Amino acid sequence: MTERREELFEKVREALTNFDVEAAKKATLEAVQMGITAEEIIDVMSEGMELVGKRYESGEYFVPELIMAGETMKEVLEVLRPYMRGEAGGRLGTAVVATVAGDIHDIGKNIFVTLMTIAGFKVIDLGVDVSAEMIVEAVKDSNPNILGLSALLTTNLEQFPIVVEKLKKEGLRDKVKVIVGGATVTEEYAREAGVDGYAKTALAGVDICKGWVREAMS
Amino acid sequence: MTETFDRMMAVYEGREGAGVIFQPRIKHWYDVNLAAGTLPEKYQGLYLDEVYRDLDVTPREVWGSGDAGSEFTGYLTLQTREGDDVEVWVRQTHGLSYETEPHDYVITEYRTPVGMMRQIQRRTEYGTSLYNVEYFLKDLKDIEVYKYVLQERMYRWDRLRYEWGRRRYGDDLPLRVQLPRSPLMWLTVGMMGFERTVLMLWRQRKEMEELMLLLEEEFYKMLDVCKGKPIVELSFGDNMHQDMCSPPLFKKYVIPFYRRVTPKVHEVGMYATSHWDGFVKQLLPLVKETGLDGLECVTPLPQGDVTLEEMKEGMEGMFLRDGIPAVLFCPWISLKTLEEHVRKLLEMFHPRLILGISDLLPANADIERIRFVNKIVKEFNESL
Image (cartoon, rainbow over all chains, first blue to last red; front, side, top):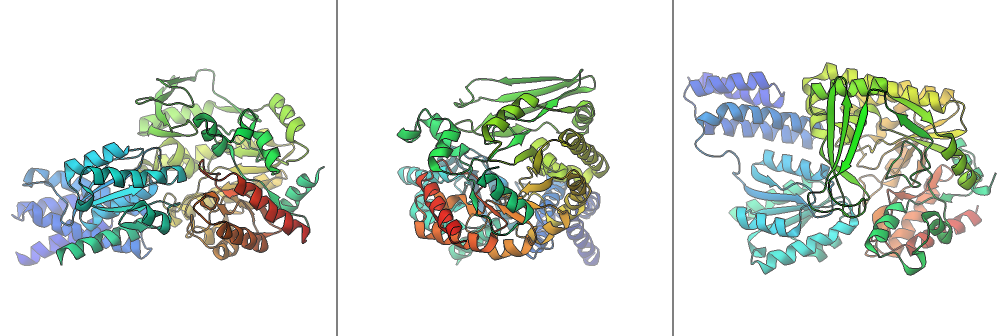
């Protein structure tokens, strides 16, 4: 029984890392039929996604592979949904992410969202061109540990301090860590904007967020 | 032929001894400040090329199927002619082209005998750009409609606009025609969106590859129209970025495309270039395999992800247009940083450099920095 269980877990991990949707679904259903809980299978899938994340970090995989792995996981979660007791994801906490008002660039933001999900965060993606008011509302509603803001156009970098001010006004600033990114953002600019972190790449951004979680746990 | 024209030609030909041309793109800065009412007093009421003249720098001509991003929108020389039974409907739901409103969309529909495809876009704050809320191609059914549109589509040389532009700028600027993105980027950026392109390439590879080959045919149609015209450069508007076009995809689709197309461009005596304005560190080592003659807008650190040394190494034998990260024109970056960057760029890339901004002058940039850079360029040219 234990051997078969491990064998199925390995199949799930392998199917995820090779983007084999049908194999992943088949192994998942077999596991459920054996009495393994949906939550245990989701943990195994997270391990598979971590492996995908590592391959991305090492340069073996690229963003398209992250998307395919994410899509594979999404389809398997659909199979598991009837067996689940709650919502999946979020073992490291919640992050609200947005490209700020006036800016429509979303490549970096989307990669950050994918990598954060793989890392184990529940991510609420507000999309692009999101006003400071909507961002603060989302923080109020979802109580995240992390707020990620992105901008490319230099004119829209001004939104970072505006969001920070609004968070302060609402008494939310101390409850959430704010990280910013985008090609034209510099470390100096981020510091002056009053945020907690800045990352040149999505990958570096996720590392900073994971560091904050570790810090909070210890 | 003016000195400016000759200097530009020297870059294409790899000729030594000519001075550097500074050709910054300022249309975005101009458009936003015009719409916002924040143009400097002395530029109010001036046309864009009069601002260029005041700054004593060379405008960037884009003659081709360019649109709102072109420096001189309207002076196009390639016109698209849709098939007789293809109807194109465009409608903006609320605001004006330069003043958007909430829930304001630009809806474009192609209605054909084999079905309809629709795109929904929103304008950015001052209408200088559009972004997609809904892309034209959402599934295989849309692809069939698009294939019909492409098969029926023709291109025409716009004689009148060409003649007008030649009179106004022709003495100073070798003619450059803007072409669409290479097929993979055409789909990724313009027609499907990144995620859908990746997923459809994964799940419907055959249909996607057929579509890309059909898109390639469009370039041959355009090339046929350009043949025999006084065009010096054909520029592919790729917006290359390694996160959208990973090295494996670049090798599988982009390199083979360019290897088929660039010899045809060279056969008709023109140079081929591509617009690379994203993160490109992983792609630069592969660019030589494309056969392209030059790259536009490669963006070094601190805005892009490559050093000037990496650019130089990756682009060996090619010319560079632009090279100054746009953020260096913003007031919070020191003039010293800007100056050091420009001097190093000139030293490293001349004589294969048309100096410019990677990519556009930001709306909140200090316009006087254009004059500052121009002074450095003049000093450099005098020292030659």
